[in-house]
Each structure stands twice: as C-alpha cells, then as structure tokens.
Amino acid sequence: MTPSKKTWGWLHRRTESFKAQSASLISASRPVSYLAPVQEEQRRENGQGSSNPAQESHEQGTCGSTVPTNSSSHPQTDISSAQQPKVKDNLPPPVTLSGPRDSSDPENGSNSSKMTNLKELLMREIDGSRAAAPLTAYCFMTGFIDAVCFSAIFVWCAFQTGNSVQLALALARLFNGAHDYSFHLADRQALCSVLSFIFGAFIGRLGDKVGAKTRLWMTLGTFIQTLFTMAAAIAIWKSGQPSVSDSRDDPAWSNVASFVCVGFMSASMGLQGIMGKRMNTQFTTTVVLTTTWCELMTEPQLFHFRRLVKSRDHKIMAILFLFIGGFTGRAILDKIGSAGTLGIGAGIRFLVTLSWLVMPVKKAPKN
Image (cartoon, rainbow, N blue to C red; front, side, top):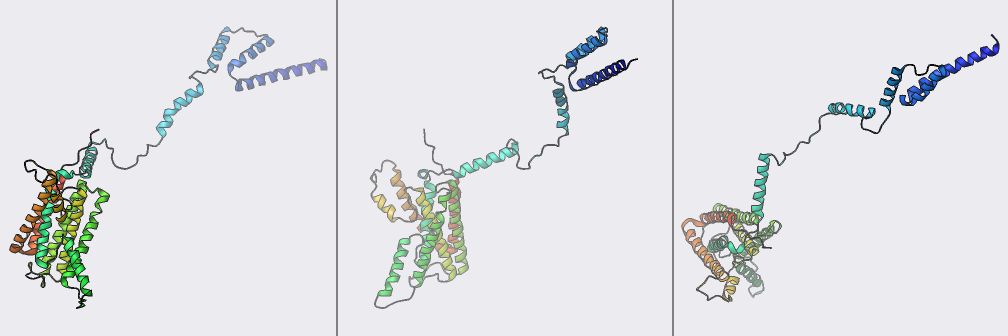
C-alpha cells in the first residue's frame, strides 16, 4: 500500500471519529428535533439510508414531543409546579401576634358594644330646659348649706357678695381713727370662705375639658360636691364645737377643724355655682338670688297667670326652693346639730348625683 493511500485512510478515520464526537456534542446541547437533518445526511453518506422505518417513526415521534412550545406544558414549568406544593408544605407555620380577640368573637363583641353604648350615654349633652329637678335641688342645697354656716359664724358659704363686703370693711378699719390692725375671727372666716369658693369654682373649669353639659361631668361634678359636703360634716364633728351662735361677736366655730369645715362647704358651693352657670338656664348659678330677683321683675310675661311660662316659673322655683332649703336646714340643725345636718345634706347631694343619669339629653337637630 502506497503512503498516499495510508495517509488518505488515516484522514478518513479521523474525519469519521470527529463526526461521531460532533454528533454527541450536538445531541447534548440541542433538542433532538434539530438533529434529524444531520442524522439523515450521515446515513446517506454511510450508505445506510432510512432502512429502519420503525426507528424513523420513533425518532420523528421523539422529535415532535421534544419541540419546545409556548404552552403551559413546558417541562421546566411542570417540574416547578410539581415541586411547589412540596416547598409550601415544608414552610414553617405562620406567626400569629398575640392580642385582643377579634370583634367577631360574640363575647368580645358584646363587651365592646356595651362600652360604646355607655360612652355614648355619658358623653351626650343634657337638655338644661328639661333638667329642672336637679337644678331646683341645687337651689335647695344653697339655702340648706348657708343655714348651717350662717347660724354658727354669720358668714355665707354661697353668697360671696356679703363676704367680699365684709373683707372690704376689715380693710377700711386700718384707716379709721382707732387704727384697729387686728384681723378679727369673723374676717378670717370670711376670707377662708371666699378663697375656698374660688377653689371650688376653679375645679368646675375642668368640666370644660370633658364637656360642661355632658351627663358625665354633671354626674361627676355633683359627686365631688357630695364628697366636699361629707368632708365638712366629718370636720365639724371632729371639732366638737356647738352649732349655733347667739351673737356675732362670739362665733360658735373658732378652731382649725371648723375652718376646714367652712372651706369644704364653700368649695362645694363654688363648684355648684359654675356647674349651674354652664347649664345656661333660668336658674342661673343656683347660688345667688340677686340676679334672679332682677330678671324675674323684668320678665315680660310675669303676670300671665293663666298659662305656664318657663322663663318665669323656673325663676320662681329657684327663689322658692332656696328659701325652703334655708328653712329646712335650720330646722334640722336645731334637732341634730351641724354634723348631722351636713351628713343629710351629703345624702341629698348623692341623690342629685344619680338624678343626672336619667335627665333627658338634647335632641339632634333636624336636617
């Protein structure tokens, strides 16, 4: 064999070997459908042809099944969708925050509804024109408390006009010929009453933050008046002093405990006065009658006796019940003393406190 033939045979074997390697690389990197023309050409070069129809049909079937399409049955998509439930099952359970139960819970929803209804009940404004009963009781308590205080020391707890004038007279004594520089006991008691009254009225300003006419504040403020009256009763009981004075020069109360009693009584009246004023009714402040008398005398329908006139009748009720309160207070005072009388007054105030819970509220304006 000549060297040229040997060289040609070696090249032919190398070519066949390179074709075989290329075919394996193409089959690994491309789909089978791309290899059909290449394999057919190789068979023709080798003289094999398509002698195996079953194999060709199998290859064609394989080629058809492996052609990539845009449908949802892509192998990678199917694999990921098949594995998705398994990944989801392997996830840890969800974290839930601890807190109050949902309002859908029947018990929790019922409690929430009750709290909402209670808040609405307390925060609604009372109709002052239909709250004559507790305001009349306020006027009664003005006369009741003043009867106890004036009978012992001739100082008013509610009528601060007289106390203010008394302090002015005490100051004027410094400039008379006698040069009396002493601060009399009655003047000190009047000063205690004025300052305590102002303190109680200042407490009444706190109601502006809540709502001066709301059922909540009217109930709470009257209850504070009850506590002040009860504290006054305990203080005068601890003082051990008499209840009635026979002369202005010799007041029945003179020790520290009696000053505490005067302070608590005056504070209760100051709080009552500003609460009555905030209601803005014909009862005015419920603690002073000078303005009420003037307004009654200027009432245009004063002499219309054949029908009810609310503006006139409420003023008359304020004057009348203040008078009844003073009479009742002095009558009880003569029987059981100052401490017992103030204790009864605290009980009356507590009943007035409860009455605010049932007073009618303002009607909603019509659209």
